[in-house]
Length: 322
Image (tube, rainbow, N blue to C red; front, side, top):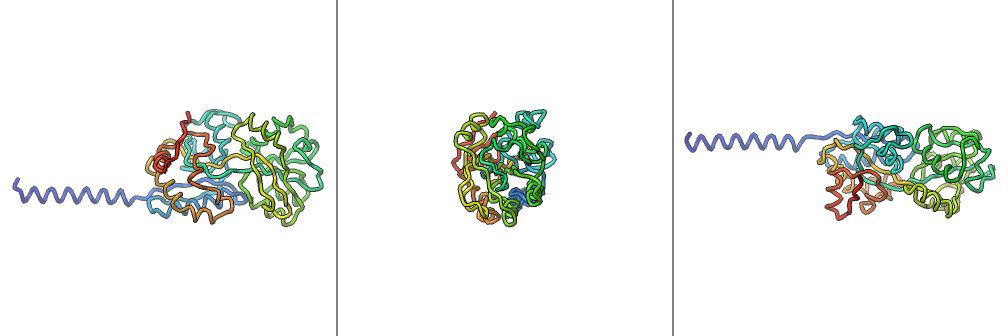
């Protein structure tokens, strides 16, 4: 073969290779993010994260309404959705096969920790409730049956030495809980979400309610029994008519994926999310608490290799969770 033909062959091969690279570079990965109901914080923040991630062009992310932590983790564990919101406590139970999870889901992986989610115990002001033990004999919404909220309530009741039989229990989600308050059908409602929560904000415009403040001693006992709970505060004036700080337990909202997600996809996901945090922060007051510095705080699952690569590049220490 002469030099001229060899040059033509080399040029053709190079062009073909560049074309393949160009096609690969232009390929778009489609990622769905399971959030929660429209009355909580997952939905608006998830939508903003999807938009932020999609700005890079390599990923087209879409936020989907969901049934929050337990349902999202089951979908992720089965590989039926790529990424979802979940609490760090529920994620721990799923990974280890505890509580509502009958089998361990060892394929779950952390994408990032987002923000604290507070146990907000709504009280009718005329219900005469001062402490957690005053719930005896009251009408109480403990969260949707089998939900992460209900599991948190059970953990709190365990430390408080309360049982469902001590009160009239309803299993209601966020929206149904606040609706029952409006109709004077319940005295107490548990909501676990970042503040301000839309359904509680709406409730305080028409109903005279307050939030239960837990004692420091109880919060310390709860943390000792269940370390994923941390003591926190819902600041005064977060909601209309509640003008004092509320001491309450909090867990951490996380983004979770599974171990079959490609490293480069999760790397691009977190890179684009943190590159466009201003847009995420603008979506909801709670979202302002999402920072790169806190991206690994309270995580209870192994970190996905793609996320770990990004965080190490940013100087964060990635926890070794087995």
